Image 1 (spheres, each protein chain N blue to C red):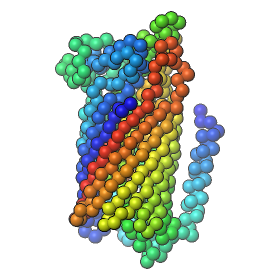
Image 2 (cartoon, rainbow over the protein chains, first blue to last red):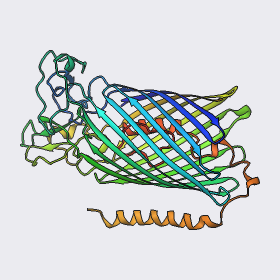
Image 3 (spheres, rainbow over the protein chains, first blue to last red):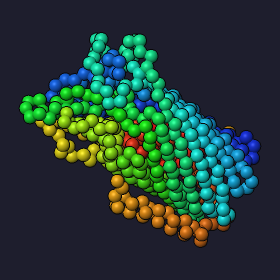
Image 4 (cartoon, each protein chain N blue to C red):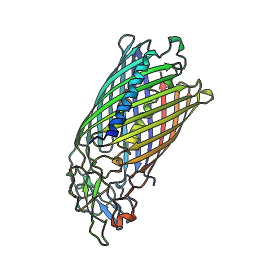
Length: 389
Length: 78
């Protein structure tokens, strides 16, 4: 099932202000379009979902996965970096970034220091960043695990109706602290490796205000497995993630290969493995073709439940968001780049497929006939332009 | 509760990292051997722009993000 597609255009500029001092600016526009599963279970009857104030409703036909209405997420982001040499072996980099989406805003700053050793064969780098994010969902933030209201108004598709209902809504926010330590080592004339360790601590609102967890009827009979009610999901207000990352680049003289691996774990119970391979195939006249392969495996968050039954005690935290589930994903992509004068223009197309590793054993009643874990497919297109003055 | 297997994986990963660091002492090139290393594609920040985009896309579908670095500016994906 094709759900979300992504298109991005980027302009990236880098200028040397004076020797040892560089300024970088990046402007990004990207659009994720399509619909995303809202967490509720499909059923053998049509279902209607509403926003927190009862407006902005959308419907799902019988037998289909509930998707959260028309979904358009366009993002504009700008970031700047300033790099300053401090002596011959040390560099300080400061960054600031801003991004804005439909109902989400992020502002961040970062600072890192890099030091070379051993004739610049070894580089140690450490840094931190702080980010302030605000979410201002249409219709306001729902009460955690509150029961979804029945639709008021005419059942329109557009979520904007919530605004017309007169709801100002409450904005929520979160703060993210990131720390990173990395070591880059030249192995030989054609090989360089990097290892990195990072910690990220987030606190604040991390629930998705548009997603539900269904409470299904487990009583034997024709209605078994049908949702009795849908509740807004709730996630913890703290999350600490840690990761270990390693990357190796090897140049064959014309072509180059890049391999990387990341192991991540957090206090939500999520652990993941990410392995990537890029092969840079150098064509004549500076043209480049680069295939890309990515493999991803994730374990579910501890509070992830595909659904709850009426007799389950309501947990403190619960989410049916497929993004927190047990899954594998594969990406296959191809990039083409070519120089045009002092600029480089590139186009990249990637196909993504995600498959759940949940086998649906817990399905009861009508849910046994439903696809509780549909595959997620996406196509990403990336257009790039870069130029150095 | 963290299982023994998880601790085993983490300890193993740490050992690999430490071994890499230990092995670093004898590695490297002379300044005149940097012909390939000087190529832009051989820097670790070679494709930060695209990697940032990837971060945003994968964050919209998966529960993991980051780990590689943020020298090129944040993503605001959180």
